[in-house]
Image (tube, rainbow, N blue to C red):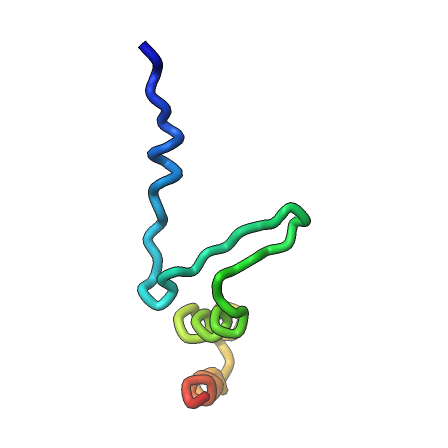
Length: 72
């Protein structure tokens, strides 16, 4: 009997992601360059809306900055 390969099952599983990032994929090519399926501006826009920046949380004008980003 041949032992079962467990690696095949691990490769088929995809991580759960935020629905807004469905289809997002990151790969590193042979030159070490990062290749993504989304435009970097789209990724930054998502991060600005969804992730709190710990360095900026004490700023007084943070709410104004977020409103400006949402309008764009």
